[in-house]
Image 1 (cartoon, chains in turn yellow, brown):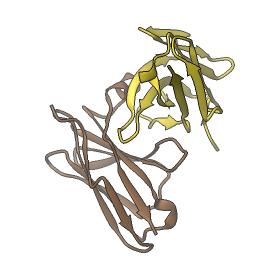
Image 2 (tube, helix red, strand yellow):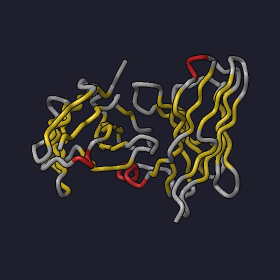
Image 3 (cartoon, one colour):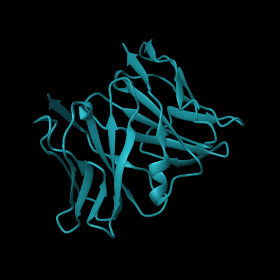
Image 4 (cartoon, each protein chain N blue to C red):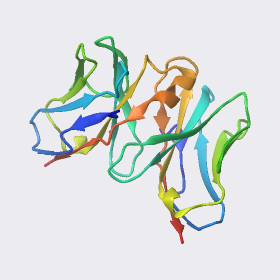
Length: 112
Length: 117
């Protein structure tokens, strides 16, 4: 029973173009969503988050969009750079002190 | 400023054995959470320690236990190892138990890769 789903295991994008990573969730109690980036041999690092009271959050080249009615969020990276090549995890939490639930991740490869 | 450190980096055990993994939190952090990341999966929450007590627990059997020391470092113990326990074990630290936006302040260590044969 996967509550957070990242249905694309991998994505390949050319340098300078837009990368769009998708995430779906099933638990309607989730109201806080985060994206993490993970390089090999390193732990995940926090990238950007969004609360359910917003539908968009932007930080530099990274923008996260939330569609609550569709239970869908996406991470846009513009422009994509080779250093963005990593595994990206979507995670969600319900309000209060509930643990994060992670998706399986999407491996992004940015080709120069 | 040292981040979250974990030891050992790699470990090989056989079925039925017991293992202890160690974590030192980032300086200034007092809360430690442990996650299991199986191959091809995302991290899965095991439990969280704050003030030397287990505060939250995920869906893991009692074979998984932990401890937090007065200096905030933590250990994860797994008894009666199964092949399915092979995974990357991640430790994450934060200041206080993360609530809402607090998850952003959680820092992960590089993990310990455990292989059970």
